[in-house]
Image (cartoon, rainbow over all chains, first blue to last red; front, side, top):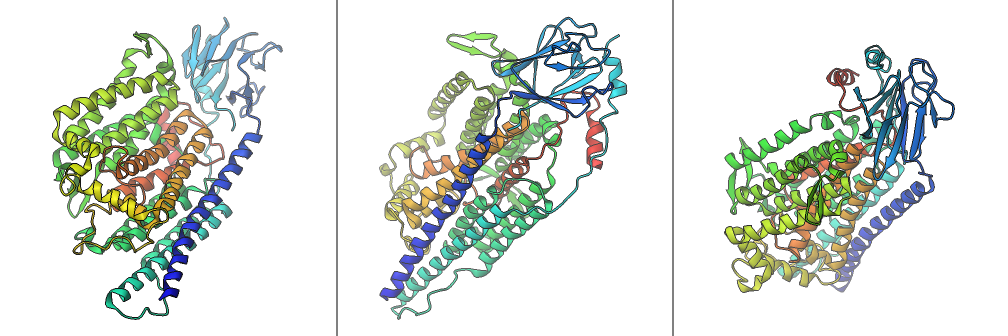
Length: 145
Length: 486
């Protein structure tokens, strides 16, 4: 009788201990995950991926990490240089203000387009939006975690 | 000469058929955790079986049998554990780099629920057969849904593009419940079609999150803008407040027509949380809470069923054998459980063949766990929900774009808020509302809806980068069809 009661006590406590054992394993895994994520530098605020570039410079598929202010154009002093004959020297600028991205046309000859519509002045840009500058098409994406 | 005409020519460049190569990928962490979960569940089952045997022997006045190691319902448990490993195998074969913690955590929670169903009187399920068998059937279907979604959902276009269609489906479900629903215990929740009955509001919570994710990710810049001022509050442009008001109205409508306080509370809480997640504006939350308090106050004075719930919450002992009966019994159950509980199967013997709480298997599983596993046990269960929420938010923070981020956050918050509402209701921290404890409560609709959530979360957690379709561009249906063909 006593042995049976004792055995059941042990089983009960073992079950509770196993629940916490599981939690411990999981939390350890979660902490490792978070540490690994924290080690990676995530200074970038977003990425710009080239989706189409007929002149080949930069080639399609390349992605750029973005700072708070990124200028785009044909001039070599831009953050991202676009070698395309329809791109102006200082064509457009991407800026990160508050919590959102904006695109601004800097008086270019051919204009700047977001998802097919022409931008005049400052225009908000969401992740996934496509910007067309000259013949180059670029897509704004989240920073890599 | 603008760039736009060139677009027609250039659009063809990026369009190539992407083939998905499938190569099995070992999921070591998931396997370890699943083995651990299986061991814990077997131990729990042996503990339940041994306790039952001992109690039966004591009641009969016989000697205690020497061989106490007996499983309570070996076939049910074995089927369930096999199901878990089959899902694991499916995920390994699919070879995606997805989350490895969600499945074991869900598996342990549902396993604890299954042990509870094995332990309770089997005739609670009604006409469908034994409680444990029915729960097992739904769990197996749920696991199949998890596996199916986690393996097959590679693209979220079908979710993000048709958000208004999803919203329409949700409203249609709601209306169907209003019109065709049957009243059970004063609440009009379930719809019966042929031999099946279900609670559409369970599925509605998933649809709501999908719609909100689509709406908020698209209109976030507009919502953050400040153009209207109302006293100290800065509000977004008025037209963009309309969905917010509509949500508030829908929540109130659910309370008034469906008499389902729990679902209304869940929807509104998730809506406010997502609004905060996507805009980081605390003023929205304050405004929502003010609207909630006003609405709740109004309902308290106008509707009897709301007033009853609040009155029970304020003082359940005013009518301990009538209106407050369930809540009083739940409190007693927690008290009997104490620190480490009475042990599985050793809770209060049923009174005249019935458990002391009528809706123990659906609305009060938390009280039952509190009695048999004690404070230590229910803290562990709450910890498991916390893990699910943490995983979901982590997936959200690593997501590639806003839609996925808000979707993942919303899905995991649905589980977390649900667990909070019913656990707090059982503990008399907030007025009790009839809502299920995710994965633990008995009930097909709830299990299926929560399985959809976990399946989607696992699918969303994939770490390889899939190029996103740029939104708001013509010719998207064409590309969707191309993708479908690939």
